[in-house]
Length: 140
Image (cartoon, rainbow, N blue to C red; front, side, top):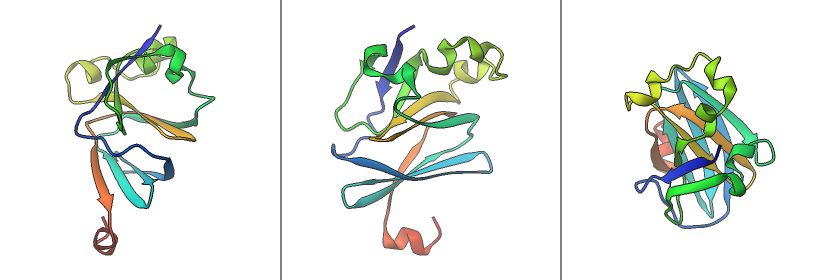
């Protein structure tokens, strides 16, 4: 089954080398920190149901030969999985992730590709923040 991805227009940045620097999970919220050029960013995924962090060779359902785009925007940081992904795997049927999570619109599956690691996550819509010196001093 092909995986269909859709860019999220609100979550785009200039193209460049993206390096994941940290992935943390606490109180049903997943944080992904990454560096793009000289800037540091934070993606916050609220209401996280499940996530996995893998390098590109382990995440075969997102290889370019398996992916189609319903919408592709240059510089996209996050893609929503429209078809395939966890829902396209037989293991999903026994995983305890009920399809109602996807259908009611509160939670969706997303993928964040980088040059070395990929985050595949089921959560509510993410929020992107730039990490600045002021952000660090108030504890994010």
